[in-house]
Image (cartoon, rainbow, N blue to C red; front, side, top):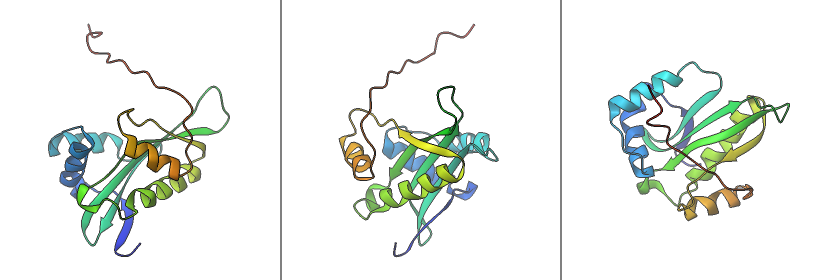
Amino acid sequence: MNGIEVRSATPSDVEELAKLMAELGYPTTSDNMAARIERLTDREDYAIFVADNDGAVAGMIALSVIPTLYRDDLDGAITALVVSSSFRGKGIAGLLVAHGERWLFDSGARLATVKPSSRREDAHRLYERCGYQHTGLRFTKALEGLGG
């Protein structure tokens, strides 16, 4: 894509990643984002890539692989995907998904899943265009209050 390079996220991307998380609906500080990225650095089962548009972070994708009891292969997951509002409509999300799928496959995953919020209809359309199928529901529960 013209002027767009997908590369691994670096510590210098922290501020832009925090802004992207806010656009996705998960406001955070640069310090919190830095701590999250540090926890994930050097893990072979997790990756964060950014779409770099001539030095500007236009979007990001985060991915993970995990072994399961129900399959021999690893399961792959897109855990976060967001394109900055100022760069949307340019094919960046599809580029990030394709790059992420390659990383998942190279990491041993043969299945990729994504769990977008039920209210993100634009994301649903994107994933369908990328070949993903709606296969079920997700249920979530906050585990706060279980601490002792």
